[in-house]
Image 1: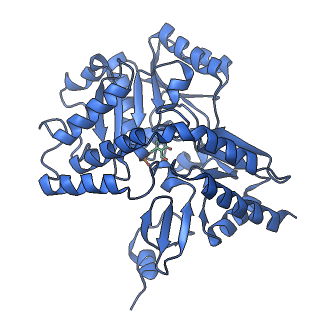
Image 2: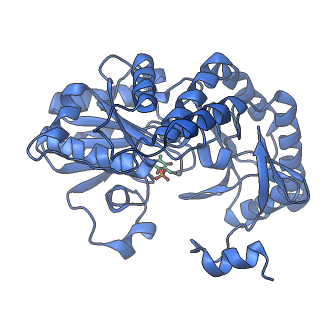
Image 3: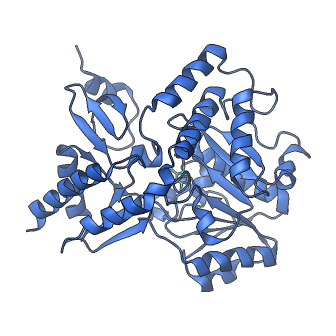
Length: 396
Ligand SMILES: Cc1ncc(COP(=O)(O)O)c(C=O)c1O
């Protein structure tokens, strides 16, 4: 009989020739467990998803209750479905007043597609500005605004009219003109290897958009829900986007994305033609129920207030001659090493020793640290000891 691993390789489409091939049976809190019951500490939250930890019992309960009521009823936007309504109401109550209209999607990349279409419709313009080294997803609109030619050239032609600027370079903002529909930018760049912008840059970005009637789209797929030390990362810059894009931790472990705007802007999708964005499963009631429950846990347990001290502990412990820099904000950190070769060896040794980490799509010399926000100080100490042991093993 074939093993699960053999079947995975035979029948599940592969994304690379070198998948990790780890096999987990269950996950709880910061840990994932293999068939032998061995615990692995998830230092990357399934790439920015499990902010309140895996399989939180409160989230599971709410999901089970919703399953007993109903699953899919109708394509998005027609029926009044309580989980969608309650979740949108909660998000709007936590966001600035202008961000009051939530369009739920299936994923982060679909939310980006919706946001790009909305910006075109609302402004009547089609030119877009994005950043070098950005990542916004894998569908063709998102790929068009990805700032890395290596991953996109094989798929051209993509969307026309896209210009790339350097992240955090004020001078480049001159590219924003009255022809620009929107600037799309990650509040903190993730796959670029965690790049944190300056306060003055974000202020200047908002100003240039205002002066030219350009919409500012902030992609907070990775940065929202406490990851950088505030509920949404943009709160730390004293600006408000015109369109906010959410995903990943939004669903509390269930697949869910959203783009959020004012009612006025969002209204552009419903006329001439109607149905400007259609999604069958977007805002699935079970996902919305899970997402709302997850957000309530995040707030109730005041997890965000603990982020700064946990960031400080990582930065205090991860000091080594082979570590060039620990970059980032909150629990969204990148440990920079000499090159990919050494980084990969260290990552593999960490995984072998029970710590799950990886590198970044556009920054292969850096190791990702983005654990569930519930990670304890003791668990941080243990994780850092494993990382430092692996660094010592290969560099001294
Ligand atoms: C900043 C950012 N935007 C968008 C996406 C796409 O999200 P999804 O994979 O849910 O389509 C990602 C995924 O990694 C991301 O990091």
